[in-house]
Image (cartoon, rainbow, N blue to C red):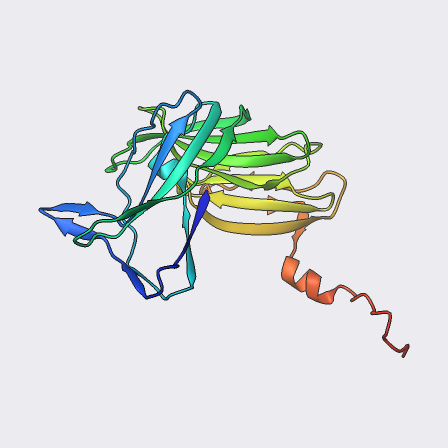
Length: 250
């Protein structure tokens, strides 16, 4: 995931709008990417961004899932650049500085093939991976096109504690369910759909030494047993607040 921020220093309001010409749509915002050898990565899809009005001196930001635009599944270093084009008579294009990132080799802990009838990618694969950057271990979910080997979506769920092995299961909707330990007492149940989008996140608190587990019913539905539901917002609101040094004792 990348974030590009555009600041208007022109002195007047700017309007950014994509254009359609002969059935071909040109977006005012586009991206290019190169690998460590300087080779350009081909764009997988032509993403079109909605119209934006930018007053003088103001900034706007756009969040972009780069894994939808480029195939970055190979281990290596990459540089990505944003291009903003005013699609008017002048067609001026402004290019950002390059942002750099590294794709490391994660450890695959789960793989499951599945089908998506009546879709461009009929055969897909769920992967669950872990990656340690030297400081912490994170867990990732990935949906791959099983025919081309290209990533449809790869994203980080959160940090996780590796002394409790994550549990994975695919439900009757062909959704990937992941149950993992996020801190010593709290487990996360994340649900990912066939397109690699997070559809639901639930939290559970450990109630015994064994911890929670998935149980599959006869209809194929999944249930988490061995833990109690946990609401992070309610827990934060109920936590005692630290006193300021200037507070008077009650």
